[in-house]
Length: 336
Ligand SMILES: Nc1ncnc2c1ncn2[C@@H]1O[C@H](COP(=O)(O)OP(=O)(O)O)[C@@H](O)[C@H]1O
Ligand SMILES: [Mg+2]
Image (cartoon, rainbow, N blue to C red; front, side):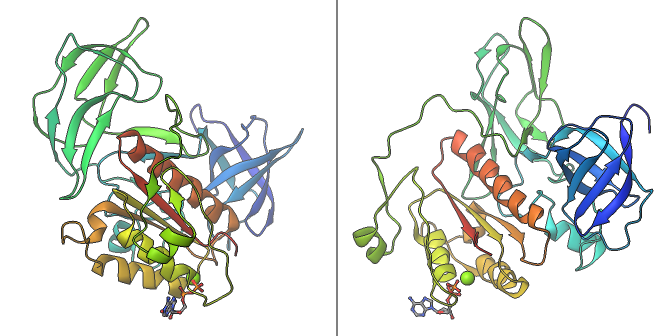
């Protein structure tokens, strides 16, 4: 297994796996479990055993199979190709998986979260000699008709541009800018990675003094919301929670919609997946999906995967927020 540390399964209880091995795992590290390489997360470390929560069905998994460390926490890739897509809770592209392996996700389907072959028309905004700080925008890509994707310097990097590509078509893995700081040269592409459980940094928090016009007068009048604020819709089954969120997604005064279906039954998610692509954006009469990303996790998936889907959704939302967009994120529902 090269230099990757690994352990061996010696106990399985549903999605919870007990691992023994001589190599230390890190807390909340992402691991690959068994021969099918199911994605899991380290949730408890004891002196001589590690407890892993698996995000997929563990039927058929046996003791003695290996658990391989990835050395990093659950991370998502951030870059062009997110908008309009449908992901599961750990940012696997469901439409692509359906095309490749059929309507059921094959266990252990590990693939590129974002399309690595597609060429994006990149407009460069920097030249050699420019000095860039983290979060500054160095290129732009028209991700969809409705969204101009701003390519930013990832958090923690700053320095002088020593090389910049010409405007032109590039895939997400191609280095388009080299930035040098005191220590090293950073090769920057159209994508960056981010650990989902860590909030993305910001310079300062803005006061909550701009109302979010939801487009539903009853909400705006009786329960006004602020941009940057949060709200919950409590209610029994069939009382209109999901419908209200669909209306907010369609009419709220936000640039980007992140819709996380994280606990609904499979048929309810199906409804979302069927309904959303039909919705027309009242702003420009284009499909609403051109500024929406859907994350689907049904109530029959392991709890850990559903929990992770909210973190994944928030990370995507924070990424578009960092570009300067107003992002509305909805999670339906967190109670099941
Ligand atoms: N404001 C409303 N007016 C008329 N019908 C509604 C309204 N809100 C919800 N419904 C209907 O009630 C049913 C259940 O709504 P739904 O949003 O799925 O409930 P929940 O998500 O709270 O379980 C749906 O068939 C929906 O069309
Ligand atoms: Mg509902």
